[in-house]
Length: 313
Image (cartoon, rainbow, N blue to C red; front, side):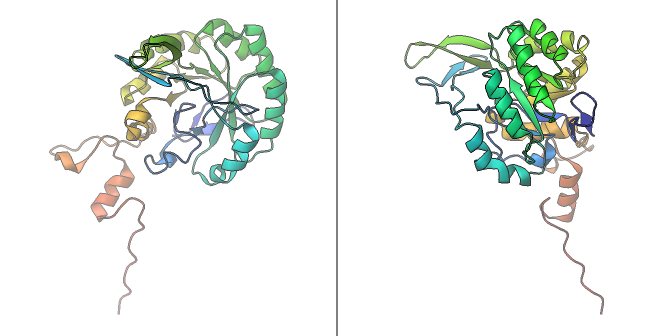
């Protein structure tokens, strides 16, 4: 089921499934390749990348919460140049488009990054991540710069802070699609050190907050909206589509149960079978698709080719 997730045009991004991992969830494409069938996803969104190298945050990285987790990493990465050198070949051989998540730092860095990415065949699109406290005027300038210096589709991931003003500014500046939203920020006490730690909040309770925002903005903007936040089941993802989102991004459930990312993609991509009447528990599993069913019937793994027929004598 092909889905156009950006504005129509010659460089519009069309995906085979409206499901993709959120930035920072599955690394750069090699960490989960043995756990998730990447070809079932619509696209791969990379870890956040900055134009220049960034160092990891010091201190506590993860704080467990009753309804999720708080994560503080500092977005460590070796910089755009090294990321491309290290992963260009891998991305070119993946069975799905790659969307590089670029952290929007300065206008100059965004301009130089987009000029370089414009000639990268292994990158299908760019997702520009905006800081939580960015003024709408600066957000508008970053998006205009990105659109001007690259012909690749541009997604813009918005923070929930002042999201309505930022969404309108980025929409007017020509963003191809708006991702709503980056995980909200919060503060929690680390039970091991006793210190207060700031970071991003992940978990099922994020969904109602973001879902409402997606529903309100989807009808106000020209650019398509991609929903992200608190999606842990197939129904969670469908709720975002029902609210008006064109596609969805999945985050923390992948860390807990990597297969759920694939199952959600199968479900929204029309690859899920209804459980047959009288089927035993070991005759199906959530997310089973036509490929798996046919392979089971033939007594082989889905990746195995059918055995060649013996010639008649």
